[in-house]
Image 1 (cartoon, protein in one colour):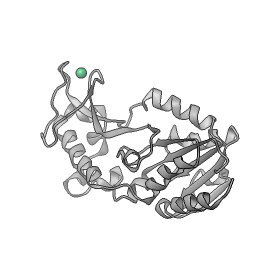
Image 2 (tube, helix red, strand yellow):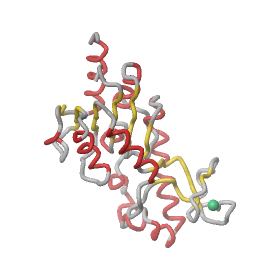
Image 3 (cartoon, protein in one colour):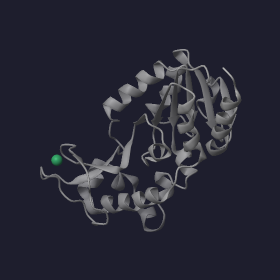
Image 4 (tube, helix red, strand yellow):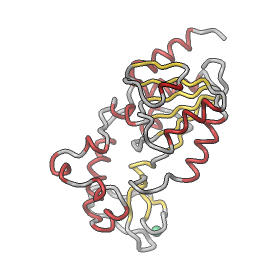
Length: 236
Ligand SMILES: [Zn+2]
């Protein structure tokens, strides 16, 4: 890693969980537990009941805004001091990598703190919280969170850049992701195919482990700071 010119990092829900952010399913507690995810996070569900979906994301956004980056997020941003190019490719929607100081972030699944209109994807700033139902864009369309819902494609520009970065990285670091959800699951394989040294950090073995050059078992909040420490100690 100290010799790499480019490090590509793929992060998933495990990294957010260590900041106390529940996964989609884990957030379905109380009244929310009774709803089929299709009603809460699909275009069809939104059109059927916009206020319901709006309130679901208000609730989840509040959790995210209360959360703090954990030592794993901070360690990844510190790697920028030692490697010329560090790009974070994340499946998380909480914006915690940016709050930890990482500067180059590809958000494959969008960001819960951003909004766009449903019909035309016009980006929206300064949306008031706590409205209870979605306001409208100047074009007349309802606003929605700028996240990728079930059945939707990943943002093409983000995906294209993720593939391009992973192909040109000397080291790829896969952290806190089960490696089961496509197309992100194919990124480690592409990295390996293009000659990157592949490091996986996860509490348990995953579909990626079999191709990893190095599997570090444990929580990212413990392992990543130790990697940074080891890098600092190493003279190159
Ligand atoms: Zn619009």
